Length: 412
Image 1 (cartoon, rainbow, N blue to C red):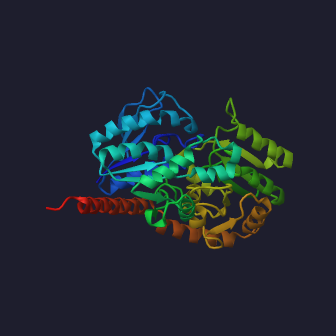
Image 2: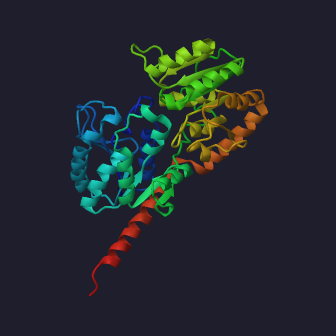
Image 3: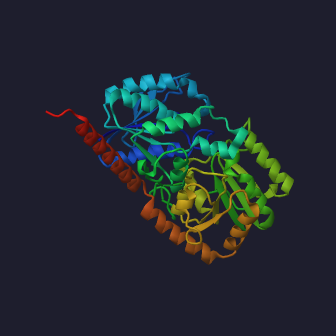
């Protein structure tokens, strides 16, 4: 098949860990490469945010990245991109005419809107993965939500016209139902993890060191430095966890000339709680270095208020490290409570400490969880499996469209 993936703000070429570069970037890159390994031809369409970028680039994964002109050729926060989406849609349509894809798979709500316009003009099946829903973001962030005001209305509209919705977690199907999307229109295909890169043992050619320990136990949390990731909950839990340090990987780091506001806020929280000597914000960590960092931890803690999916738990599990996570979003699927790790109420530092403390004191239980986690991630979350399951949804969608067109054709 000829497959077009559309990801307006999340380029597969981006450096992971910035404000708008995270799980979606990884998902699009790995899905594209996995589809290529299955023999498909894949192009990823993303906004051109640098004047020096070539219009078309072929990656080491075998897929093509196409840079779509829309707005300034400079980084723009994703929540400020909406005014440029009409131009993105127009250019995307012309570029898709050149590729002539069999399916268009849009990632995120703005990509979905632009892709819906293009797919309708070209009579191509449209599939949508939202990655995050505006209704959920507004529920948890309230006035702090910086999304355009019409985001939820657009999401409902594009969900209505899409041929298929691919949700990344079971929880998302329930959220979509609240928007009027029937479950019969939704397929659940999770995100995946690179099992050759994230392993329980160091590869000879890989980076093999991590920051030295300053405490007996180490907790690690990884992700963008934004409030919803809930790092302050882990910092507060440290007050009940003696001999335990916390490393937070993501964001600019303390050595940056202009630290991010969330960095400064978390430092202040740690100082106020008297645990600043046990909290280190180490900034962005290169993908090549991440497995060694994960393996250096006794537990990986993911404590967001909400999380559409969350790739970090899978990466930790693939490295043989148990996860303690909030019982939200994708972690309700990936982390099996009391089997591969532990799930706790979100935004509850006492519950978090009560889950983490006994695990830190029981190496045998951590080892048991690690074995189960590794088995689960290998059987359910390889990118090869995710790509194959996604391709199956594409093929089913194309067949439905072909049957629909045949039934609507005039007789005689």
